[in-house]
Every structure is written in structure tokens, then in C-alpha cells.
Length: 223
Image (cartoon, rainbow, N blue to C red):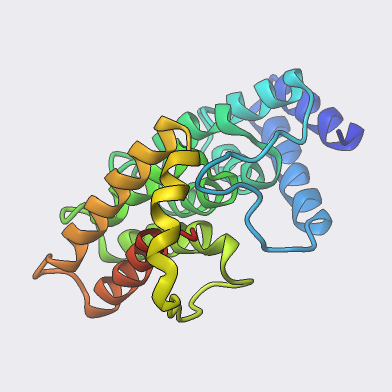
């Protein structure tokens, strides 16, 4: 656990004035960006990332995601991917929702959902990506975050084309048996969402191609 981050989140929680919370949340964001040396996802489809804060620090971070001030919410959303865990996902889900008029915090929340991962986080990304009523750039961002999350075990970076071996189908039943029910059900739901993207006549061709790639990762049994 980082004492520095816990101290900053404590300052954030104690800020009575909006300006104080803005300054603390900006400090938190800047320290996270300076500290993080890798863009690799912290979580996976099967398991959400572990928190990098004490329980109190995590509580303070999650509270900041609901702050009245949009800049505080944005800074918290940008920090959450590095510091949060599965308990942070519901708050990021709210920020990523279509009812949120703040585009910046929506995109920050989408990125952090991909960083934290886990079945629920992946499900949020999948639903956003497959929503035909959603903005095209939001759908693409959500699908990109999902692709990077799903492909974590296969590639070291996004947008790597994947050509599974001919015998990869034998891995799928075993993977399904080894998975918790929640993960298996989420996998099925995500594949269903991806197929809906592929058949969506209004969707961009790049979105359809990306959806097909992610589905192949999942169908192969190695993701």
C-alpha cells in the first residue's frame, strides 16, 4: 500500500471547500500518472485488480467519484484504474453511463474500467460497446478497453491481430470447466454482445472488425 496515495485521498476526503478537493484530486491524478510506468491492464476478465489503498483510502477514492464537482470526478476517474478494485467498478459504471453529460469523465471511467477488469467491469464495457444508441466514439473506446482486457493473456498490447491455432477449440471446454460460474456467464453475455455489434448495420466497419477479433479471443478458449 502506498502511504502517499492514502494521505492524498485523506486530504481529498477532508476538503470542505470545492477548491481544496480540486487541488487534492489533481495532486492524486498527477502522482498516479507519474508513478505508473506500464499501461498493461491490472485486472483480467476473470479477476478484478486488487486495491492499492487501505480500505479507508479506497472509500475516499470512491466517494470522490461521486463528488459534486466535475473536475474532482474526472481526476478520481483517471486515478481509479491504478488504485481501485472491484468495489470501484459500480461508481465507474455510473460515470460511464449515457446519462452523464461530462464526456471527459465518461472516457476516463471507461479506461479505468478496462484497467480494473473483472466480470462486472468487462460487462459494463461490453454493454456500452454494443449499445446502438450510444455515441460511436464511446462504443469504440469501450470495445478497445474490452479488447485489451480480454487479450491480456494473449498479447502484450492492443490491436494485435490474433490467429488461434487449429486445435485451440480443445481449450475452450476445459477453460469453461475451470472458470467460476460468474465468469463463464459473463463470457457468454459478452460474446452475445459482440455478435450484436457484428450484425449491427449502423455500426462502423472498424467497430465490427474489432468486435470479431475480441469474439475470436473468447471463442478460442485462451482468453
